Length: 247
Image (tube, rainbow, N blue to C red; front, side, top):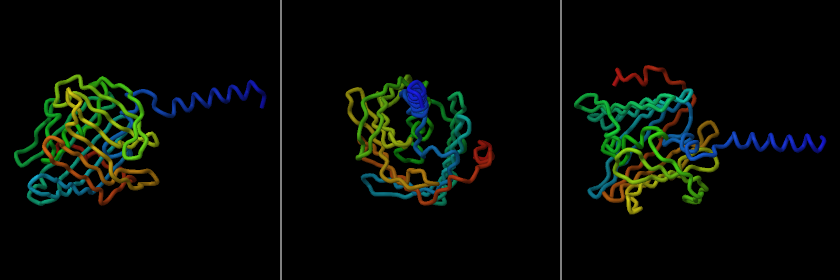
């Protein structure tokens, strides 16, 4: 190969690398998710709620479908039996528009942006946490890389353009892959309000998937653990799974 061809190949290689890996804060955020980035996810999860008065367990079924920029998430509480009517459903379009609904014993309620900090199933996870991030609703800034629990991560600061209970949050996204390693929620004095951390992963079709994670409320002194017991990332989920009429 001549010198010119070698130089051209090197340039093309650099271009390919640049397009293969996200470069902006927005691109980094868009490639990560609380439940991994598989196109289809069916999971059985144990949710453990820990507080000053003790611990409680809940059984959840989680279904996720992603296609061409769209994302749909259904979380169904299946145990204890007397709470099995509780469901959380969210739809996000390719343009970023999101709609969410919560089913309780009182019926189905559509959620708005003002419900973003509402806790889902009495846990430390909020509606916003369980809805994939709309980067248009935040000012995103790429910070210096960070190491979280010995994992090298990109750090992205997100300042909400809407009124909420925190001033800013910092998302830590694994440099290798797209795993969400952690989130810090900070107040106006940079005090830590809540904190999410990925504790363990498991392989699903050769790709790491979150298997144990925790959300901590540092002010309330509570925390919620999510432990994946069963996982399927190959079964294509039917459209009716995410039909709000079935809530």
